[in-house]
Image (cartoon, rainbow, N blue to C red; front, side, top):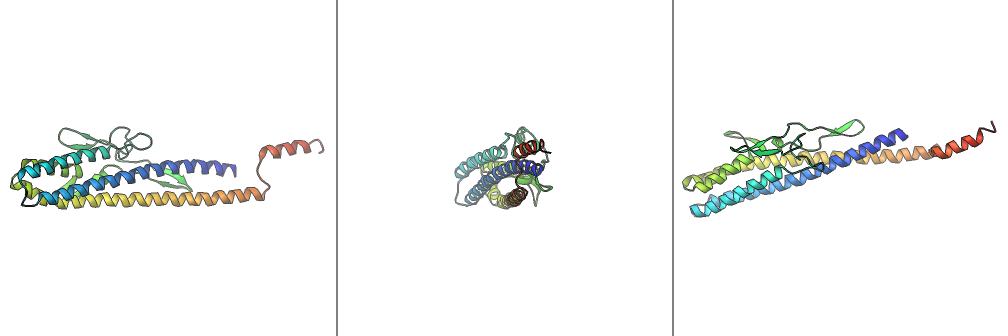
Length: 231
C-alpha cells in the first residue's frame, strides 16, 4: 500500500505539471486565435474599394504590429521557464533570421507519465500551431501576416488584391489554431480523467488500510516489542 501511495504522489505531481503547461498552452492558443481574427477583420476593411493607399498603410502598420505580437505569443514560456511551443528547447521557439520568422525549437516533446502506464504530451510545438498548407504551398502565419503588411504598405491595386487574397490563408491558419485548441482540450480532459481515477484508487487504498487495522508502522512495532518478552 505504501509503495502505491508513493507512486500516486509522483503521478499527482506529474499531472499537476502537465495540466499547468497545457492550460498555459490553451490560453496562448486563444490569444493567437484572437490575433488571426483581428487581422482578418482588417483584411476585410482593406479590401474595400473606398479606401485610399494612406488608409491601407495605416492598416498595414497594425498588421505588422499584430505579427510582432504573434512572435511574442509564440515565444511564451511554460512553468519551467522554457519555450512553451519550443519542444525540448530551453531558449526561444521562434527567431527572426533576417528574412522572416523561423522555428528554432525542437520538433518533439517528452510525454509525461500520469499513472497506470498512461502518459500525455504536455503541449504542442510551434509548427503544429503556425504552419499549414495553402493552394500556393506550405506557409505559416508569420509569413502570411508579414507579406500582407508589406503589400498594404506598398499601396496601389496590389494592396487591395492582397487584402482579398489573404482571407483564404487566414482562414486556413485559423483552422490550424482551432484544431490545436481541440487537441489541447482533449489532453486536459485526459489529465482530469486520470486524476479522478487516482482519487478513486486513493479512497480504495484508504479503505484497504482501514480493513487491516491501519498501517501505523510505529504503533505496530511498539506493540510487537511489548509482546516479545511474553513470547
